[in-house]
Image (cartoon, rainbow, N blue to C red; front, side, top):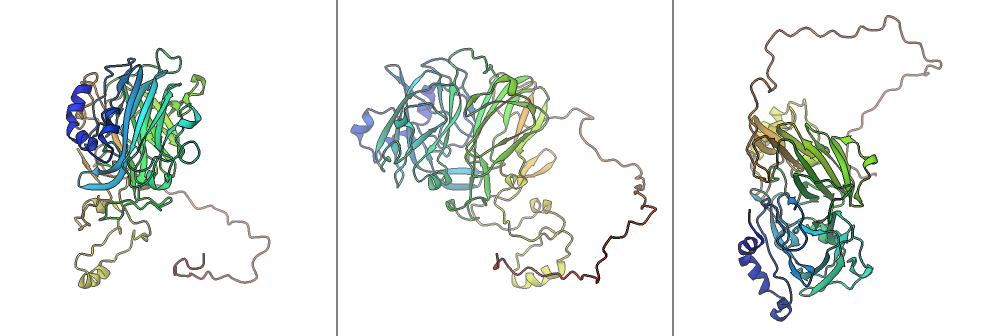
Length: 470
């Protein structure tokens, strides 16, 4: 497990690149060393070597920002800048983020810590950072124009406050918010309790990630920032399946998962094989009398949910948003349903003009995973990801909770696919099929209408001709 010193070594090259950028050496001399991370891997937990002790979180496909202690103050350095994020192998997006990544690194502190965050702006426009959910002095709330002047390009501002209450929070811009959040600027903030807390229990594994969404045309790199709801890439920490890492735990571990939603719609997050309880929101830990078991929790826009479970069932358990379009990658939405339509003859005629044209969707969309239709460069297939039994036919907001009895404590590495014990996998029935028994028709005729129509109404079908009239 890498130490903070090792972490700095790993990132020294990219960190040096930032240190020699637009911000002057004199100004940088007083700042904590900026740490940059460009790999999309899930990094091991960053164990605290200074400050108050706590059990760290693991950020799915992300990392925790190192800090330094300065006269009892925990100092961080965020660098707002353009980044390139690999959303899934073979597909990269040009986004804006912090310290080399979108989302930015997770910030972890302890209840009662005094924190000082330096924010250097390397974007082409001004910015500000809002510390979502924190109790803090008004002038530190990070709302450009309301509580502070915006941070101009090339400048560094300082935020300082006490992390007053434990819980799961976020940070994101509050300047040109529509653009900057659509470009991927956000991050998690975790405040650990300073000691035993009556509503916050100790856990064996603690994960966190943010729900975010993008509208990136196939073959392009930069998100469309004017999109309101019709996004085509639904992601966790700016990764789409199969680029999202699995959550790997030990059998009977107590697991906490913290999820924040910075998309423009709600997400019913569903876990297979286990029940969980919602133990916290961005308002803090929930009272125990309000908790009950769920397998799906809806996370509204701008909310955080903290769920906990006992991982007491071995296997590979699907974990996903239950809005089915959110488990797809880039897809066209204005497409007619062709199920049951035999258009092979039409396809032959079209192939004379467009040789690569392929028939899609007449038997459902699962065929999409088997087709090798050419797609533009830098485009993720709509449904992909292969499991031990074939294609998962999933994309977007999908991952797997992997529960293993031989996973070592503190080991977050992917154990591979589950080996099912003999006789525990669904199998084909090969016996005789009985004829279905259908319900008998009613023996009596329905009652006649009290006022029968004077003439028969003929329904006229109007073919769609666009949406010009509404």
